Image 1 (cartoon, one colour):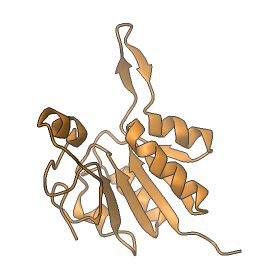
Image 2: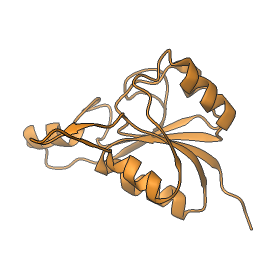
Image 3: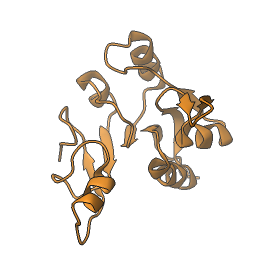
Image 4: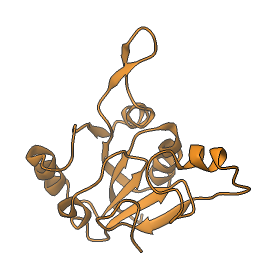
Length: 151
């Protein structure tokens, strides 16, 4: 049997869940999922997990939740231990430092919910709707250190 790539997946909202599940179903080894820390939601303020964390736990995948990936030495050391072939990023919500972007042998791949370069950053779907765009799409790219930039 062919062995899949060793993947670290970084994402947070519902939009990212389908990509995570597709990676798992394709036979790749998701070594860890990195998502935003749990936070209070709704009127009651009950602490809620991100949809990506819920999916990772359902599949028995390790979950990492650094407050800030930049300058978090414990997180960096764990990533070095994992030594992923690739990092896949979908609506994670933090900029990654060069030390993380350059770590995996095949780089970091970003799936972004707009046709870049338009609608970089947060809420690209919402902004496309607000601006009355007739169409939009998804961009998949190899990341560099900029905000939603790369090949």
